[in-house]
Length: 292
Image (cartoon, rainbow, N blue to C red; front, side, top):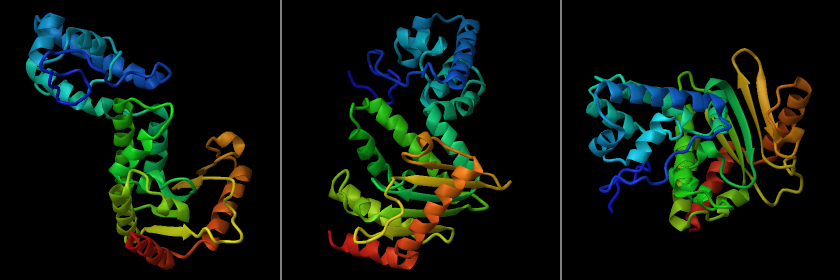
């Protein structure tokens, strides 16, 4: 069998391969997928096609068709385009790609992406790996691939796609103010291999040139360090509200209570003061890149 690698079960034999399964705990997402599935079924029945015939015309298995129509499988954009053409929906099914574009990503990531999309200011400290918003696609794929217990390949691709989609924050207008502090070790750890690592460093230098982005490096040689508790992040919004998260504190959950936010903001501020300034950090990254 030769498949097209879209993960929806499409191939010469129309078999059902692993795809984007619906998270049963994601009620809003499951409701969207179920609604889309009902629409696909309604159009198929209106066209007088059995599920097996529809599957054959689409190049997918009958079982996959039932899973999509039953809301148990998240249809990918290619599936929606194909269904629209086969069923003569004149763009109505294809238009539903927008409805499933967000819910195909895990609920936790969708919630984070919404916060980032609304933020006017973001401050983050990363201690173990490069911050997700700064990661190249290759680096993110390598990172998710190292997870144990291991993710399936489809889960890895789903998470990578979600991470890359979040990076639209850099091209927003008006642009939010973005500040990142990275531990030196995150720049020296060759995650994904030397070439992936080099491209990641080049990406950091590229992003650091943006006027609304500051990237700082926390040298390992520092005698004092306010971030020993782990990663943290603060997002501020236009209405003056804010959300913060600090690894190991407050249950590692996002908090908006001013007394907790003050603690996280205080630490972030001290970390920025202890780290190399942006110009020094850029030179440091260039130095690390030159050592390869």
